View 1: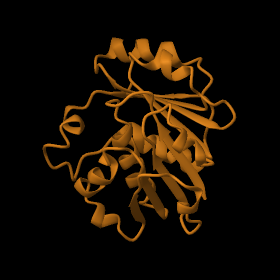
View 2: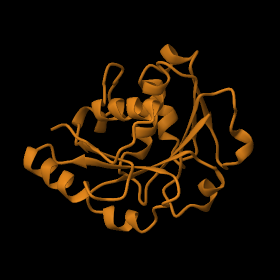
View 3: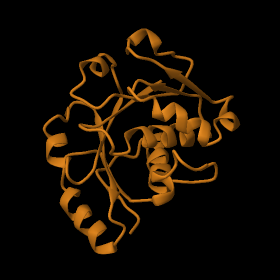
Length: 195
């Protein structure tokens, strides 16, 4: 069983959205448990919008207010934990295999001060301006950071508006590619970006 914690240093950077999509993509081939421990419980809501019933045989969702190792169930291949933004001691109780850190441009330096270097680490810079030069600048800024995988996701209006409109058929290609890398344990420090 692989335990994947998804964390951020502030709200509004897409952590819960990324948790929901990652769970969706992993559940296409594996048994997945999404633990929604965020205060707002947005990732579990998004799974319903994404057509969660289509994945019900492979994807289970638990909404919890308090994280405890006891909720980890070995009958799943992957457990994705949507943590409250940290510093949150409650999420530290989970012994993870992979830590995913989600940030926007403005909170990247703060996030880097909290990174635990002892595990497989993935950095996601979300909601980047979709202009090629802006994406290239972010790729250049993060390419040498000490993460096992780095992902740059441009701002996607349809995903951002997901709480207001149905998004059953929407995709996040960068998260889909990241899920594939996680499945294959292909962590070589590369940057995944739309360019």
